[in-house]
Image 1 (cartoon, one colour):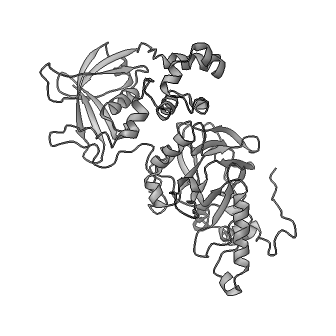
Image 2: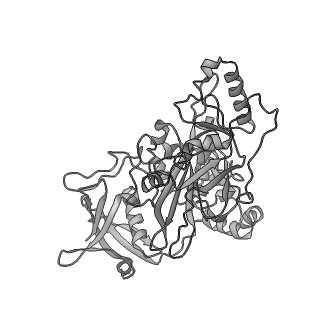
Image 3: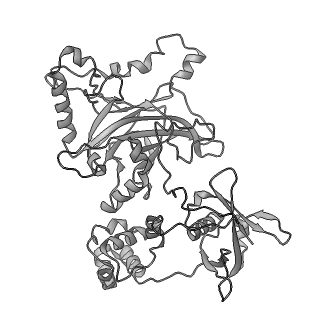
Length: 474
């Protein structure tokens, strides 16, 4: 059961407007006779963040809400049309909650900003769900690599609410300056999807977001009180230029997050004014491009430094600094122990015995970490050799070894992307050239029928209608 939070009578000289007043613009269609046209204008869902809006926001600007770092805030999810989403296997919908940057300049560098936060706060997440307080959630998941994203299933026909915790503060993304600092604003966005005929949550239903700033514990309360005092000191004429402070925040409808893979093709393209976030890994224009002969140039060392450190730091070396050791621990899925080894160099870890690791990390993780530091390799299921059609040295063709474990097209595509230092998303298709010169699409079954130590020559082809590439195994 959901309860509205009330404030004491002497909480403020001017009590905040009720939530019904805050929702008034969204219910304007409900007072009229329902019709096909009006029904289409009513969004299917309404999301309400239980945190007061700032009164120091002008009437023509978007609302701004202050949050405390690590505090649990309720988001109520309402099915405004009371539509039952019946499909093949479930009546539930899937919602994805994200913490994003509001400023466009930070949206362009979002990946770099989040990666920097990851290395400075190892083992932490930007966004979490407070599961014991949440109501109506059937499943929840937090991807270990997407620290600013959580997702869950819920039934729109029942009262549902999710309690979220934001662990990053706005000033962590502000350049250090003399004097006071103004923290950057974030966006809390919720994208909701329903199932398609295949039982996957791919059909986009609704998206809403609101602007927030996150302060250290109790800082949001002090900031809200300061804003109210400033507004009270203004004249009545000046107060009319500002929005009233509502006790809850209504998320406004927006375009879906552009890089959500489950957004259906019928969804409208998001406006750059709302979001311009890059995908989880991007390569800047000019880093990877073909020449006139169609050969693919690798990016320079400076352009691919972060990508190289994250993807190719396979073995722990005695020369690794504490920062490199943290990267290595993340790479090999030892993030929960990063804080324990925050000051350890590569030489420090390599000097530890198996008993030391078991005592610190427990039997299972201790043995796994010990084996990882000793570089014990597992024999791959399949090894193939590929050449990039580069100029032949005096000794003949140069081949690279590709080790496959899952024997799938996706795995082969990722290995080729690593070889060329590009994102797998840039590879649209992988073909194998037959003896007759026909390009055959590589399938999982074809990969499973590769023989051990097969040799291929890879020929990259630039896609005409996109920035991607196709690769032909000859």
